[in-house]
Amino acid sequence: EIVLTQSPGTLSLSPGERATLSCRASQSVSRYLAWYQQKPGQAPRLLIYDSSTRATGIPARFSGSGSGTDFTLTITGLEPEDFAVYYCQQRSNWPLTFGGGTKVEIK
Amino acid sequence: EVQLVESGGGLVKPGESLRLSCAASGFTFSYYSMNWVRQAPGKGPEWVSSIDYSSSYIFYGDSVKGRFTISRDNAKNSLYLQMDSLRAEDTAVYYCATTSTGGLPDWFHSWGQGTLVTVSS
Image (cartoon, rainbow over all chains, first blue to last red; front, top):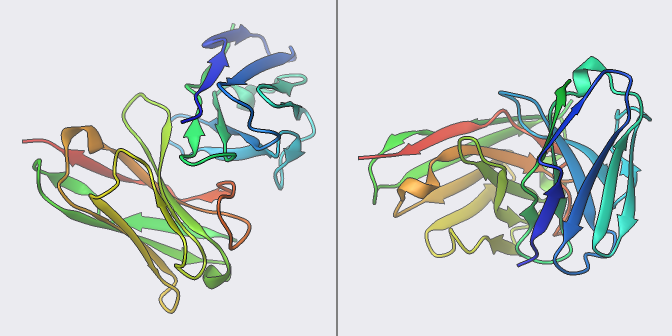
C-alpha cells in the first residue's frame, strides 16, 4: 500500500498570504496524484488531478506540481473561503490511498 | 449538473448488515465508473470500493474485502453497497463519487453529500 504523508499538519496563515502544502508518497506514483479540499460538514471537492491539472471551476490561485514521490499544492493569495482541510490522494496503485490532511487555518 | 444522493445509512449492531444506495442524475450514469469512499469521524477519507461502467472490473479496500459488495444498475442510474458483518470500525460517513471516465482507477470528480453509518451495540 502506498502511504501518503502530508505536511505540515496545520498551516496558520492570513488572507492574502501564500500557502504551500506538501505530500510525500512512500513510493513513486508518477504524476497520479490529486488534491481535494474539504470544509466542515461537506464532502471533499476535487481541486487538482494528475499532479497539476485544475478540475473544472477551480480558480487559478490553486496550482499543483511534482512527480514521483514529492508533490506540492500552492494557493497563491488565500481567500477567506480557502480555509479548510486539504487531502492528497494517489491512483497509481490499488488500494487507492489518501494522505492524512493539512488544515489551513486563519492566523 | 451532476447529482449524487446517498441513502440507507443508520444505526446497526456489530455483525448486522446494511445496504447503501446512491441515486445519480445530471449525467449519463452508464458511461462512468463509480466509487464508495468513507470517512470516519475526525479522520481523513478512506477509499472503499470501485466499479467500472459495465461492472466488469470491481476493486475493494483490504478492510472491507469479503464483507462488502459493490454493484450498480445502469437502468436505474443507481449504485449500491451491500455491507455485511459490520464492525464498529466501519462507522463513518459513506460517500458515493463518480469519475470522469468509464475505466478504473480514476479520480473522484463529483461526490454526494454522504450517508452516516453507525455500528454500535
